[in-house]
Image 1 (cartoon, rainbow, N blue to C red):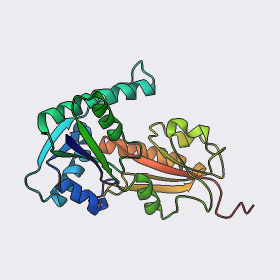
Image 2 (image 1 turned 60 degrees about the horizontal axis):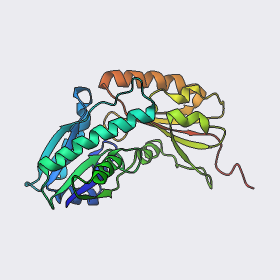
Image 3 (image 1 turned 180 degrees about the vertical axis):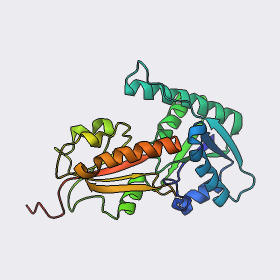
Image 4 (image 1 turned 90 degrees about the horizontal axis):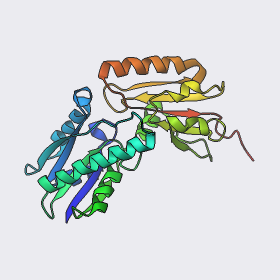
Length: 258
């Protein structure tokens, strides 16, 4: 049986690596390094930098592979993601058959934490379910983009005694500000925050968190919304890609003493 470890590597800062993650990489026989094309070469470079810094086992084999783009035309969001995961799972299966022998161990380096809005675990589960490649798998947790965001802004994630919702840009309007007092928003390519009309809402936004290119903006949403949109567009044009996240909040600590 082949053994797969899905290793969280944080949000781009090599110093986010945990001791457990470093030990897991050094115990692998193979480390798979994805590529998402020239526009996102920096993402592969961060993974390579991590390996150069921390992988001391000279017997490890490094195998690169191409990640296909998700097709969106004439598909719902769910259909597009489902097809994309199926396509990548076929690539994983081929990688395991061609590059990983029985009883060998492989590792995938995953941005942030593998359990938070990442597809790698689900894709590995698809490979396992097909039964063509007997395998088991584990997860090594990593620093999440949420942790990096709150640390950079020097804020707590929650208001005292109150819940937090983690959602996507597509679903934001369903809960904030009517239901959730604090909402962490990921995967928002349409800048859904710019459509929130609430004079009491505050936003804490960050892009490229943990890297030398980190950008953070915070303030009353009505005051900084346009600035965030323009900054995001400029940064995306400059780098060819962007990874950002933000926290929306309404209210204060201890404003509900019942």
